Length: 276
Image (tube, rainbow, N blue to C red; front, side, top):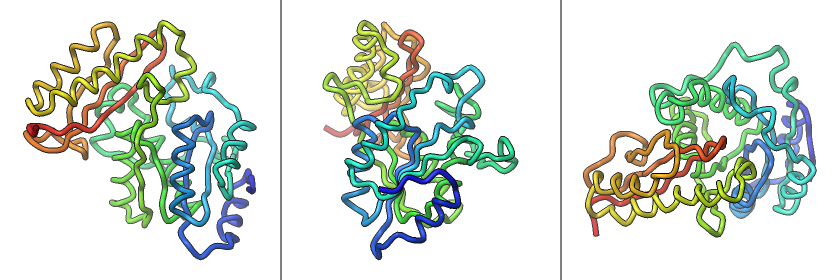
């Protein structure tokens, strides 16, 4: 496994890959957990070479968010990448990615970027799409892998790649969960034991919503809402798989965001509406 630190080194490493088959890419912010490892393993299973980026992107953090305390564990991350069979790891500094400061050119996520997570974090998806676009341009993968836990992010990245004709397959991988059902997140380490117990309400709410699916959208939301009485909920919503309005029948997505103490958690699950 080769570790590179500059954009030019990444370009050279990509050009020098001794493979004829597909190249996969897994962009991360580090602090890798089992969810990230599942992405790496999926990429390794599908592709002849796997590129990984580890970069805590300042553009996607708001002024009062947790970039300074965001966990960083590069040695452990490199060991996880190596164990998963990754080919190249790109671990740049902020100065390397943004040598002249915040970029003058950015990717506008459109109306969806101002909803849900975007309503709470107004510049978040602009920052996410801008760095993902830059990384895809540098890595030039055939396929890039993202977790479904950040479902709105996944939808917006697919939208960007499709509308800008970027020629990359975007692969969504199922959410990996702790034994109790809590979606794995680098921020879970902030939770105390009592907070972790309270956070279990998120998956109980989502599963209650799934069970109520045959009764339609209102039944789903009522069932989920009834499990969230001990959390500070930012939103609970039911949408179509592309995050448009929910259909009366068929596939939909139930999404939730809530605060547990000082930690903000998100989760989602597919729901089938109006069908037993």
